[in-house]
Length: 61
Ligand SMILES: [Zn+2]
Image 1 (cartoon, protein in one colour):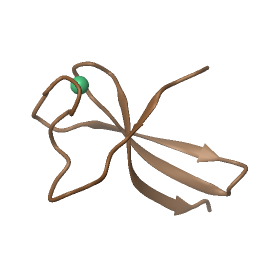
Image 2 (spheres, rainbow, N blue to C red):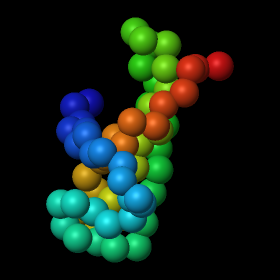
Image 3 (cartoon, helix red, strand yellow):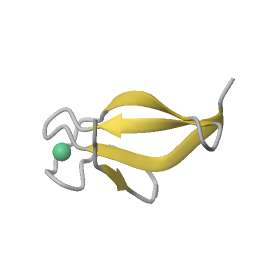
Image 4 (cartoon, rainbow, N blue to C red):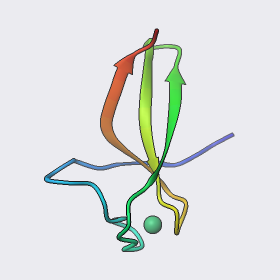
């Protein structure tokens, strides 16, 4: 499954979708990156369903 992940730099807050302008927060998802042994914390716009990476990740347990 190919998904497009948009990389965004987090400033004061990440609440508004930079693509469609939705302004009420995001759904979230986790995605394991086996190769780099990390889990990425990603954000999904509820309106346009695009996926964003604001560089939140953790070492996988
Ligand atoms: Zn959107």
